[in-house]
Length: 506
Image 1 (cartoon, rainbow, N blue to C red):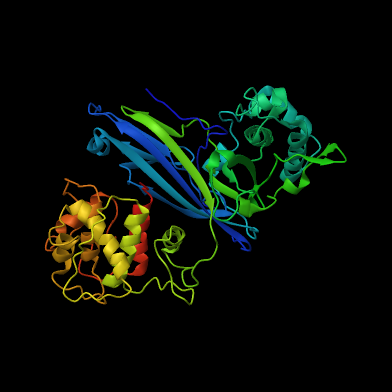
Image 2 (image 1 turned 180 degrees about the vertical axis):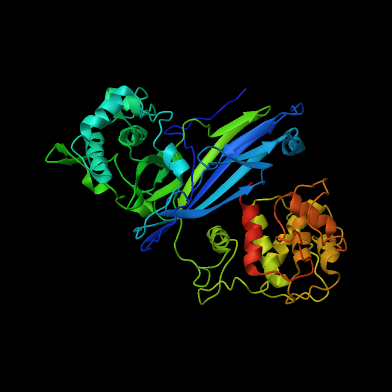
């Protein structure tokens, strides 16, 4: 049996491909979107149980680019006919949570820009054909819609002229109406009733375009016009859909067709939305509309709840990470106040991390996750520990170790710190990759499966902890299936590990 969740506005269904275009960037905004799905896993979970979650493609349009992190990592990543990404969790993962709550955390960091396209976009002929075809709620083969399209565009000679006539018709013909009778019903309902919400405006425009041999699609995401820096809001309030057309000489071009414009009490065409968005930095893309797929499906488990939030973040980031591979991870951790930079507004992403620096970062990380701790007074200190800048973070972390190791006889944190470092701390020594995961492993879910592809961990003292970290999708190793346990680790690599962890908020 297939089940689905329907959102209160439009159902966000997903996504596509990147276009090869040149973009000039001006104003930018950065948004953080956090999705959390909670499921109850019963003791009698069937072997064919599964969960599927559509996460979209936030890079579907040139004015909205970003990165998605998921925790825990799925068993499979599927795609639909449009290239939309779908997470699938199978029995092998779900059975580990019998009698517990299974939570999927999805973190999207999206950078939007006020862009201009200077070169022709590209899309495959296969996808172009799809964007000329009828689809659920985009009824481009309906006789009434076909006849209307022919009448609207009968005097036009170019694609752009046709798109302009269709834009004018839809913007003037429809009336925005949130009544359940009219909203989220698609293009044919909009054509017959003249009413609907953004979904009706966008799908009717696309249906008429496709009936006129103009490739078109509906983008789903958010209009964050009223969102201020630092404000966290349920995204249901800002769900939005808007169309894009593919013009041969320009590529994919967005339009804002929903807005209604009145002058002296008389409705006029909202031309500010034709072949442009009023402010593209406020349009946050999650993907391509496809009403044939469900936002979430499950079998053999029970869904408890689903939470979704969007936040506009402060644009103050570090000057030396703009072209760095870990830019998004670093920005995510900075927004969550887990990492800091230096006084000169740099992060130094490729610098090695010392033991003291890592203790400080990890202390913030576990505090952010709101893990359990014992608020004990007796703390274990290595022989060479100095009462300096790291002490507050050190004391805090040891109280978390006290809870997870259940060892406070020799002072909170003794069993972990002595196991990893011995009797001395040597705080300014660069920390090793295997030591990083050894200090991290107590906070991760135990993993029994030792069949992992990393080929160079057999002789590591912390082999068990490396396996636990890998099975929890906190580390992934290098492309050659090595982990390099005795190598040092950079600030960017730590940010990447913590970013994966932080996507599962407790």
